[in-house]
Length: 385
Image 1 (spheres, rainbow, N blue to C red):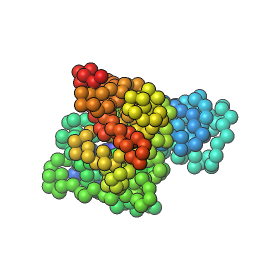
Image 2: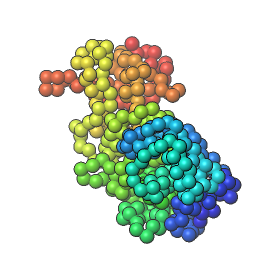
Image 3: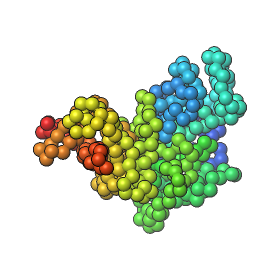
Image 4: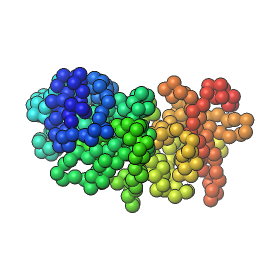
């Protein structure tokens, strides 16, 4: 099974390192899910290398999708310390460093930097080692599975439980379920889905999909929280999708509000929040507020109604909702069309975006709502005054 997950021409030692974190996976996959990917696993290494090391005080300083752009070790507060840990993990990917080898690197790094950390050494080293390797593998595999030829031949993905002796009930319930590769469920439960989670995804060929179809999408809603059922805090994201998305949070400092917006959008898409609920995505500055006829500092709100109205035709991701409106406010311009409607417009990573705005008077005060967020063209932006 390991040879199917890690091809023979993978980087030297990758399989050996990976066995230490995937030993609980079942010894064989079903024949209809034979993995067709015979590529060097450079994608996993690329994923780790592109991360920007960031000092942190707590594991909460980097949350959800920001992990795909930022490398951190909870409590490691200097760039040099974080860089040494990142280098040790990269060696594990390239050269087959085992957990015991990593622990030696860990001890040397701690001694060099005089780092005083919390928690048991065995527990801390295992969490750092396993979580980073599993996430890198997941991101690299996602990139491979999304190549056009693979998506065409294998339109479905199967969720596979690790076979752990003490399974999470939800992960076990998803075992063997097949969902479309573009099913939104993969934005939340593409593994790993928590510390110690060894679940993995395998592609399902078109013939099997045509014969058996897809399983129904699971209900991930949990009363009183935006956290999906079965997913640990800070694991509510798809590592590969966030890595490949230019609009995902990171690598600069990620605000708690950005994380909350993405969670809110996903929760609305799952049918959780009723009409009328909203999350702030930006704040109008003094000059913008004057033009819009509102007070400086007025929030720009994204409502559940807007998210639902765009569900069938809008390709904007939850991460884009979290990042783009405020980015356009700061780096784009406030413009008005011939119909009198306002919008923030601008270019972000080579693409032009239009964030439609509407000022609403409510209870004697003015409120701003984001009515749309979409791609546009430079020609259309020039027409706005």
